[in-house]
Length: 179
Image (cartoon, rainbow, N blue to C red):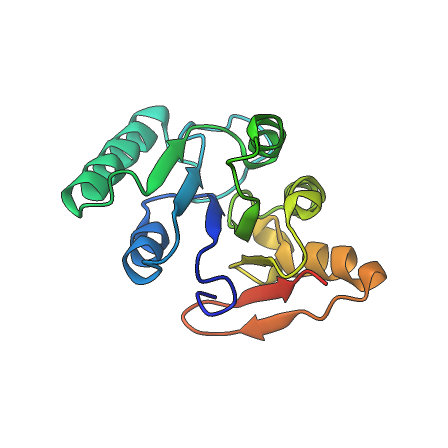
């Protein structure tokens, strides 16, 4: 990813405990920074996921990540955004000024339900410039756990004629380049 957009801005949707965010900040040193978007709240309806923890647990995870980001010297290279992935797209679009570059990478790892992934793709695709990367993890379908990432990505990309690249390590993941 870093070779395609060496000086690009990244957006992570669904940060959780922040392992990927910390790794990306550590490895992608030429990037001006990352927006780290996660509401860190319990979703009462429509989000049947083991990561849908209590508000108290989410707050502890948020505070641990905030401290880890400060301890590892990433000040000024990230912005923690407590928002939903799809609504942050609207905020990002409204706040984009001449100094704000478009995102070079949008990593979708929020709600894994088909409808939620589709909504994220529809919200973020128009904000991604040509050559930008749209990617995500959990590239599977598992109706028993309300996971429809693979189907949502395939349904979104098929009419656009976009090739989906797939990896299996460390998790099934996907990546596309906007043409």
